[in-house]
Image (cartoon, rainbow, N blue to C red; front, top):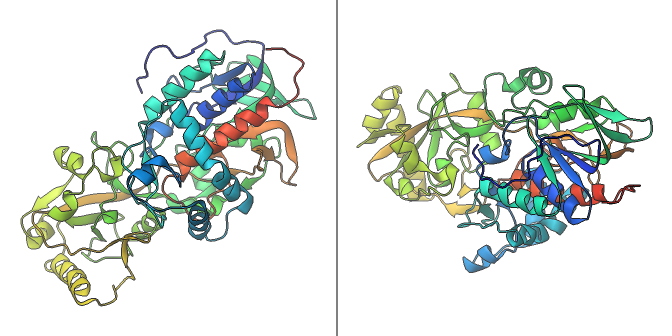
Length: 468
């Protein structure tokens, strides 16, 4: 990822810092800036030679409620509805204290990000949202803004600096040993190293159901922070709920930016190799991903018409349908029969499926899979009847793992007995407990900003003998 010049990059490793942050995605950058704003000398170590991690590979959506952009679009939303949605999507398996923490701080974090220059585009509805609250932003620009602001306050960033072990004196974490043997001491450490979507061994251990899923994510998402903390006895949460993301192009393709598309949330249906629907397409795209992995041959197709194509939005990667057509990633035909032949489905199968779907809408009959809306509780179904017709070959990809270290509401890492591991904090994808058994669109980027800021601020509050 190419970033603008002027970032506070350091080349010499200091012997000691106030707050040491590991990982340069949004959680790490937010923690770095928050610690610097609190008056601590903060240093961020990034394992790879690039800043961004999975943040810059995501759709860039943040789930906020009560924003200026929602008001401008006439969208009615509330913190209470946000909280209800989070608990409903998480099937009550979330840590309610973390859900409350997010709800309490999300609007202040949104304003903090805007105060630092972050700008949000048109708000969209997406998975798990009872009201449209997906706020799109340029994630590369977002991280640049945060890092430059941190640099102005004395913080520094080092690239190509992989951490290897957490240093511990028997009572508290005291710093980090790098892979090359160098050490840096710190008053507090914040783990923001992301998940382990790129580590096949950890996926096999915690998520064998993802064996046939595609894999994407930040190149450094190998679970380093997770294993370093586990070596100190850290607890873990939500590993049974690791899921893939539906809508990724079914093979490697230069036009695939890692997010896939979700035409199903704008009017498409999903069909399998038998030309049949297999899921309520308004459900959480993680649940759709599970259903897709259970289909014969794994690859499925999102089938839609010109009406849905007209809703394409190139500013939102998951709705960039026209861009996928330009990249040659869509099949296209003037009739459903022609599309059926293009895909290679059994003769008559797609025609019957689309006819049944359209007839149920026209007559007001219950949908065969219980579909009522386009996405979650938002949007009314529309028939697939306006040519031309399109199909996107869709697979399920592990983009992020949405589980991890047990933390409290100060973002302190807890051990297996629920006690804080002294001076160790965590934020972002590496943490568990917040999502529970499901995932609402925008809450990965959202929690990285909200909890990263809290982690950095609290880490900066640890006692220090040094004056910065």
